[in-house]
Length: 376
Image 1 (spheres, rainbow, N blue to C red):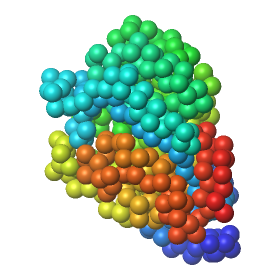
Image 2: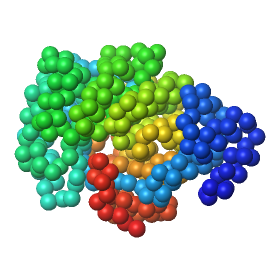
Image 3: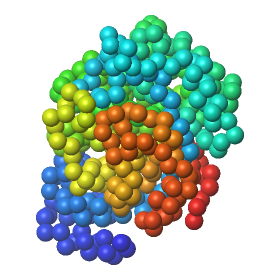
Image 4: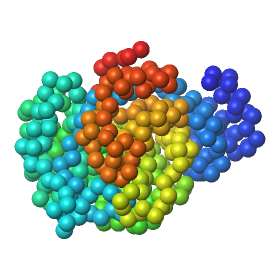
């Protein structure tokens, strides 16, 4: 859609409030909290999509990023009991889970020797015996074996537990992890920041202020991080915008976030299975509003193992400019919750084809969005 077409679309909107928000977007003005809620309440899918795609193409043109990565999940044993989680097994029932040793995890890394992967993503449950010293030893072992491999690992949920157990401050704990080889943080564990919702779905783990502070400290150390939201369960539209607002404020302060990743709630095999999952229309609205509200986030990502390949393609018209990586059937977190992809693996050729099928330009990146290769 050309600038003339998008201007005409905005001007022709019969709702004066939506029209005003549209003009803010076209003039690159920041929309406010009430605007964000209104977009969810009254914005049509076509209107939100057109505006989000305008912002996406203004920032990135037709480029769609991906990277070559693999996952290590150290354990699904966890001391916490999040009601939406289908993945973890409480420590009291750890015989139902898995626990990998440092040697086993290093063997996974070694299995990629000679392959052009650029990132290992390390996230799992919160195991009381896998403490800060354990993970520092793991980080050092990975870096000793493959120094150039970017390690993106550990949510604030994991880090907060490690630091408290080790009796170190967030600043000291992050410094130790960073010096041992931790390069960046993923976006997990954010869920919904608002305490009203957090109390109901994940009351026993780090709160919003703790999550945000760990990312703040990481940014102060020169690390880049991502952020997520878990949507489509018991939260309201205002809860979603409250979540994005807190992220936008921290990004104004630190400029350390790379990517925002909306994560769809999946209702299989968890304590919230009675809640119906969001529709594809609602999914696309979340991507679009995220792109419009988080004006200071460079990238919006759809995580294809969670929403499936076709919806990942569709999201590229709703503000998304990144669909994650090749992966290699190495993540179970979402497949266990009933995601579209039960065996999530795509090679580079498949990813490139997926992106080209919707007339976007595939670009392989590293974790920090340095271009490795463009497949024009």
